Amino acid sequence: MKPVFVVAFLILVASRTFFETAGETSDPLRFVHLSDLHCQIADRNPEGKFPLDPHQKDLVRSYDWLAAAVRDINENVRPDFVVITGDLTNLGSQISHVRKVKDELDKLNCPYYPVVGDHDRKTTYGPVFGEKYSYAFTTNGWRFVALDGYRGGVNVEGLRFLKREIRDHPDDRMVVFMHRPVYMGRLEETLAKRVYGTSLLAKNAGELRTIINPASNIRAVLAGHCHLNLEMVRNGQLHITSGSLIEPPYQYRVLEERDGGLSWGFRYLRLPRATGMNLAAKAEGRERSVREDIVGAKRAIPARGSQE
Image 1 (cartoon, rainbow, N blue to C red):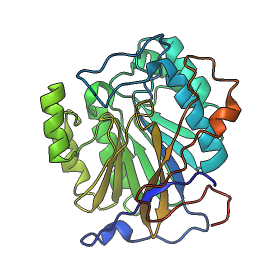
Image 2: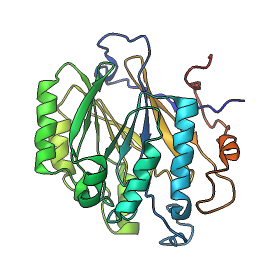
Image 3: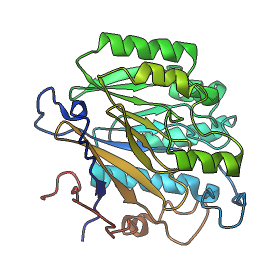
């Protein structure tokens, strides 16, 4: 049995705008959303903040999780590109850690587009990934806008860039991606404040909302930081937050154009029980490690190139 996606369909009764199309394409857009890689060369994992803390990073095998994701993306998903919403490393000041992440991401058979997160540092990120922190690209009739999320918010230059993109591309279906979200569920936000003592939203989330909410060409906003998988609709726009690659359940999100909007699913990864950096020679075991169970699937998206 081939690995499959667990797909959640977005049903918008009140928001017709999200599903309006600007013409069909022969090959629907498919892309991967990775987030919070937190790669670090480490010999031990941190303890949880409290007993049974679900957010415990597997730092020791962080590069192995990234390698497993890259391999699965190349072999099974074959997306048009990958977006990465920040925190590429856990210790952003260590340029050797950043270079090691880039070495692994360069093995992708498609373009990838990262943004900086809280743990990243421009002094090491810039020399390795380039000093374009807010940028945009167009593919398949969609405009993707990356925003600089350094230090927890989007800076003045990033806000100006977003306004220009909205103004200059009124007819493109637009997806914005950044490190911190501008919306969370009330329960998740309340729990985060009580447990971690801080908000997980972008520090200038209110200002970002005043720009994003009225923009009818923005169809979706992607983020990370929370280490949670969240989906919600605000003002006819889809807001998605994806969890960390190196925390249970060790997964990443795949999005695909469907009926003019976006559907999504997850791919789950496993590693052999061996720990540390000695897994490079265990490609066969890793290939068989993708979890095959379907939980609550409404439809399975096959691996690209296979027959439905």
